[in-house]
Image (spheres, rainbow, N blue to C red):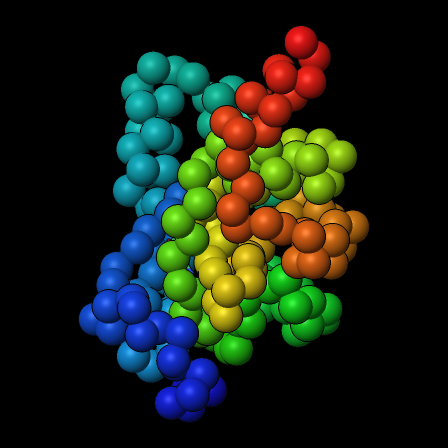
Length: 206
Ligand SMILES: Nc1ncnc2c1ncn2[C@@H]1O[C@H](COP(=O)(O)OP(=O)(O)OP(=O)(O)O)[C@@H](O)[C@H]1O
Ligand SMILES: [Mg+2]
């Protein structure tokens, strides 16, 4: 599971100290020196309890019911706030092991979604606009179906000089990867500059 000396070479310009990062659903400890990241789910127990108490105090029983019946793959609702991180961890593990897609940063192990061990990724330093515009072009706009994941450079890394995805716990992400993962992997240009493209387009029309 741990990476060998040679595989760690690409971390040479990246600090080898342990780092703490967090997202909406997971908090992550990255150990560049070991070549792994451990991802834990965020379980918003107190937020959910607080929301329910407020609904009760304001006699909004219908709201409690509505929040409770929201399907688990929505970005709100009690199931999502409580179990969204566990489900994202588990889906990430299953999707990687089913597809072994080279665009994915490997998820090595999952303890029923309660923690995942993933290969550590080198930070992706591409600007939001450049990432989003290039992915939009490469997928004929289909990334729009999962803009939450595909617009954020923090969900990608540059291992071995190749763009790879490290946050793929959502079904919408799976669909985009299944349809366009190969194309993105082959055609993604790290030097893509949206401002330059815009200037070139304006010059063409004049
Ligand atoms: N394998 C990894 N290597 C390095 N950093 C990582 C790794 N996995 C996650 N991270 C960092 O931790 C952050 C949170 O992880 P991740 O994006 O998987 O969680 P999330 O809660 O699902 O995110 P989001 O807010 O996008 O829904 C990432 O933005 C990234 O910076
Ligand atoms: Mg993320």
